[in-house]
Image 1 (cartoon, helix red, strand yellow):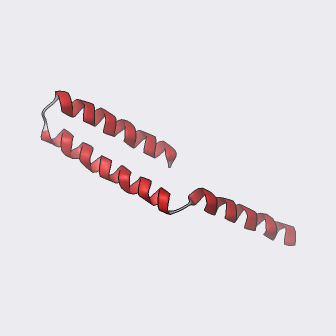
Image 2 (cartoon, rainbow, N blue to C red):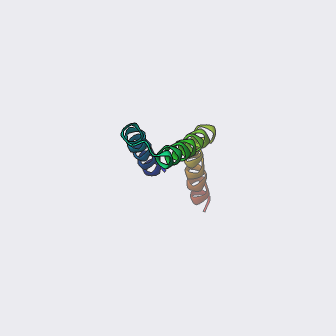
Image 3 (tube, helix red, strand yellow):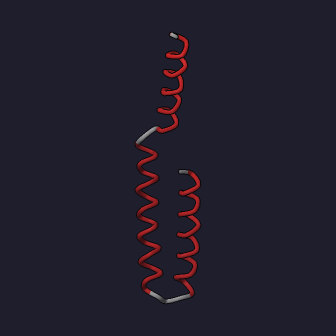
Length: 68
């Protein structure tokens, strides 16, 4: 997911820079939509501690393997 976020940030940056030099409304709209998507993705990752959850699952799996 980190790679996708970096790609989105690159698209947003290039869209913002191109909207300065090119006065096309669709460039601004696409940049705004991708920017909102990135905000939602970032908020999701902040609310859900995915790395902590991954660590808990890993510890549980190791414990289950030790029980066998």
